Image 1 (spheres, rainbow, N blue to C red):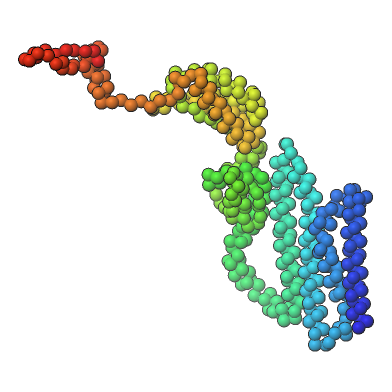
Image 2 (image 1 turned 45 degrees about the horizontal axis):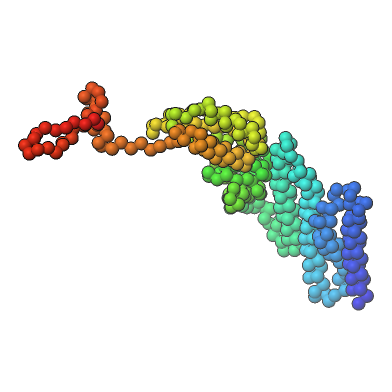
Length: 375
């Protein structure tokens, strides 16, 4: 009975020590000076309690404290729990350390934002790989606590070549995605918060893992794609070297439209708009259309793609209102030629002058004369 009391007392003492450490890290004199204190408290509190309790119990426990039939089982369970708790604590400590770096990178804006997003992507993927490796090692250590598994492992080592081929074939897709994720992260082809166009869908990279990529679309839907998709298919990355975008607005108007006046009005409206970055703009006649209209293209630049979209919509609305109010004759119209108008035109051409249309006028009986009226 005294042995069990010693065990419980030791476990409680270990938990109290962890609690004292946690309170010390939350102390203002330490927490404000050491940036790692808050992430460690947030991430490692429960893993720390668990690890302290399990490790202390494993160290203090003696086989004589229980029946000989269940003593080996208790030791085995304690060893498995200790391996799992230590792995949990190591993973959370690694996440706490990287959280400090990630929090600083999130706050970076301006010219350094692109490089910060690249580093964030790489750190996120590396710590996920490290977590997977730690979990695999912990599971292997748990299995090798069983003598039967150790004997089986020695036999498997002899056929490692065949096993490796079988596992490689079975996990070809998973390994391909894993390598593709690392390639994307370290080739700087794709980063978190990048603006991309995939399958004619506009969105931002919300999550980039070792197996899949989550794209948050403009309407708050999520497009989930395997990582290998981005290494085997083409996609648009609008923030590869910068976020600045040039938007285009097309107007189709009559030939009578005064292009110079429209160009002056566009520049005036752009100067007063807060989303224009004061850099690029132009208004040009880019095409003559078969339906008798002119195609005008207005270009304008903005700091990023959402701003460019709003700027294009605002300028399109402004120019439509300006043309409707000032030059309504330049608005596009549909032209329809009736068969009679076509016949009149042809008869006028063949007559050599203004077209004349003959009509029968009512007269006296037997009067064969007819009147003529201009077409």
